[in-house]
View 1 (cartoon, rainbow, N blue to C red):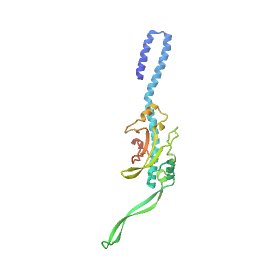
View 2 (cartoon, helix red, strand yellow):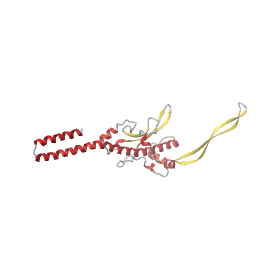
View 3 (cartoon, rainbow, N blue to C red):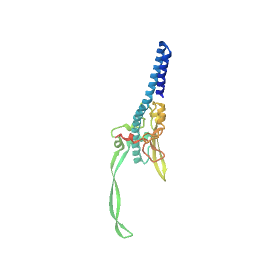
View 4 (cartoon, one colour):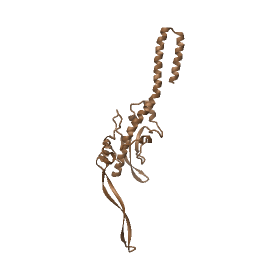
Length: 239
């Protein structure tokens, strides 16, 4: 559309050159060149704006997902020790600071036991579990890093927000199963970007994109500890 306008302006310049004097022509040419530059700037902007938006989006999504991966690892550890997921970040951080994994060793063994029915000694096989020691959850997940203390913050400059997190227990085929969900709206992550491009991003449904209007980890309706982002964001590692 911008190219069409530029072509029309050029035609107008040619026609006006034929009907007006030099002084008027100079004023008019200045105005037309101003409009030409303006529309040219708009044309360039319409091409570069989506590219800039995608660059910012990818960088910010990557930072957000790094924190979500830390939260996922922490929640999985919490469930393995406590049997359920943490419902808030305060208790999750406290768990990481204080909890330990139990190191177990399981071994098979057997013994003979007198059977009153058959009146003979019969071989019994059992599994023995020994406790070998304990390992700090913090050391296991984060080593010397204390980034878990800020993993609840949305890591975007200019944004003062925390992830939304909720845990629950749902019924799945008669079993009570712990679940959790962590999320942040794209409007928060991309708060300062082009509103029209952001509106399009909120409607994304694609195998290569982050679907929906939020970046989400886990689910409150399904047994799921994964995120709604494509595998390209899983290339990096927090370890």
